[in-house]
Image (cartoon, rainbow, N blue to C red; front, side):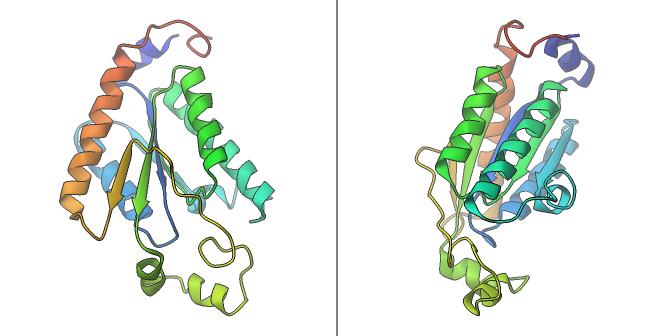
Amino acid sequence: MTRENRAELLRHCGFVLWFTGLSGSGKSTFAAQMQKRLHLRGMAAFILDGDNLRHGLCGNLGFAPEDRSENIRRVGEVAKLMAEAGLIAICSLISPYQADRNRVRESCRRDGIPFAEVYVNTPLEVCEARDPRGLYKRARNGEIKDFTGVNAPYEVPVSPELEIRTEETSMESSLTALMDLATDLAENYSRTPVSGPGYGI
C-alpha cells in the first residue's frame, strides 16, 4: 500500500500542522477549530497535545530541557505515522526550542511528509492574564519549576509558515489563513512523487 492508495480512499492526503506558542496563547483553541473545519470538509484530522500524550506515550517525561526535547521527538514521530496513514496530524504543544521543532520539520520533509509550523504569537502578559489553569501564578510562586515564559525560555520561531498575532488578528481571519495553509499543504503533497523512504510497506 502507498500513500497514494490511502489518499484515494480518504479523498485527501495527510500532513503535519504544528502549533507552537506560550501556554495560554490560544494554540488549543485554534487546533480545535481547525479540526472541526477540516471535519466539515470531509477531511480526517486528529489533535496531538499534552492532554492525550503526557499521560500515556510521554507519561515518563518531566519538563527538564532533555525531557521536553524527547517529548517533541516522540510527538513528531507519531505525527509522521499519522500523516503516513493519510490523516492530518494537528500538533498543539508549547515546543519551546527551535532545534526540536526543526528536527521534526526535517524528519517529516526527509520522508516526504508536508510540515507547517504555525506560531501563535500572544504576548506573555496576555497569556498570564488568561491563565485558565492558574499555572503562571503557581510558577511565579515557585510551585512549578521550568515553566516556559517564567523560569524557562521560549525560543520564538525563526521562519514559521504562518504567524498568528492574536492581539491584531480576528479569530475568523486567522482561521481563514489556516485553512488556506492546509489546502496548500494538501496540494503540495499531491505533487510529491510516490517513491522514496516511507512510501510503501
